[in-house]
Image (cartoon, rainbow, N blue to C red; front, side, top):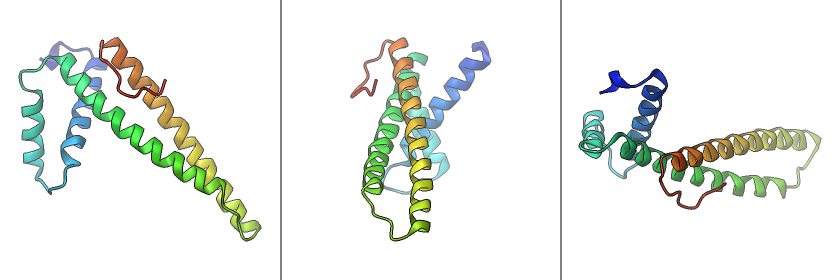
Length: 129
């Protein structure tokens, strides 16, 4: 089946499968790689390519939205901090700069996922864009 995909489609499908692996690994219990792979196979077996893509993008969207929410809270706390000296202020500014760059990257990734889900005709729960 993957032989019929273009290289771009194969890459997208592999990314989505990896996201589904992440979903299986994020459970409470420790699981072997074989168990994770079996769970992913069970999850995609009998589904259309579109359904697999949507499932992977939905998980990725939720995961990145959670990360963005946490990061925004951390940025807010750091903005309100009062550094004790010049050196601490410089470290805080550098740290905030990295956090804002990560926030921008997450926002871009989330918007890209939302656009792809719209292309696939899938609803986006709690869209960012």
